[in-house]
View 1 (tube, rainbow, N blue to C red):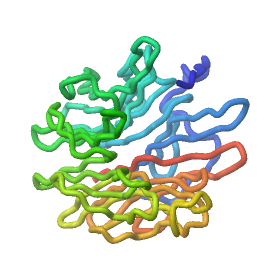
View 2: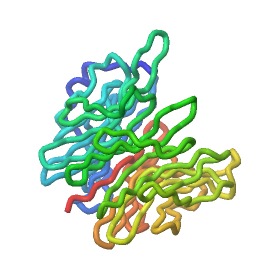
View 3: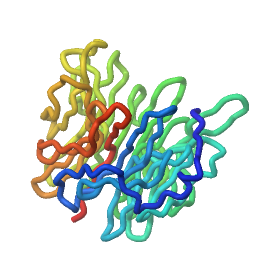
View 4: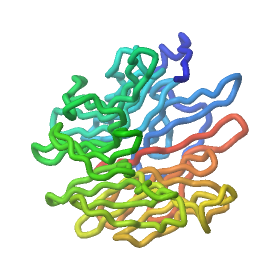
Length: 336
């Protein structure tokens, strides 16, 4: 795993630190986006940031921000700092691991006073290192599955008294898509990968990929039944799912005109299985997160080093791409 260098300056960065430039797109103030900003100097440094009202605030140097959740005036972000799985509440960091193994927090969900975080930790096993599924509740590790799972927990969602976690494990050298409900493991398919879970009216929706064929097929599962959103001739990813009323949205990407190395990834959002292109395919782009409120659809992603937010298809840039600076947006949340 990549070794990270923590400077004394990084130890003193506070939530109040903002980007040096004055780039501030006109975005509604109730929209929060989590992601990374990259600086290329003698090594590539990524900073964990959260955007609100279009303005970025640094959470920490040498970190990643993967997921954001807002309750009232409290802003929760999950990610990692120097390989330590971390979540922030209003900019104050809480470590979830001790740094003995590389770890990352992929998803965060807040239910009442309970804070759930899903991710993974690299566990040393002799000369081998294995990514191991992790779930934390209020910073305390929870039991998940019956044995040590070689894989990752990618998304967590709480509905009533039930806690849903999805991700993948490796069994017999193959990816296996997994749903954990209240810690109990349910294997839902070899050659499958889960990235996101959403529960509405007792229906469990999962977005991911069917990778059992030559190329990954963007897929949506409803209560375990799979629906392919792309063909086997292209290569795609289903990163995020959101259900609103009778409508189900999936954010992801698909290579245009086939899966050859010369083709570009197109950022897309599918509504009830029908795709809408967010980009034109001239540059690589990805849609990582979708959030719906009322008639408004928010999607966060990235295109060639520019963090993007799409609101009802209209695109907003969250940073300016330069030779030394780039960014990516992984999660969007709209405060109601």
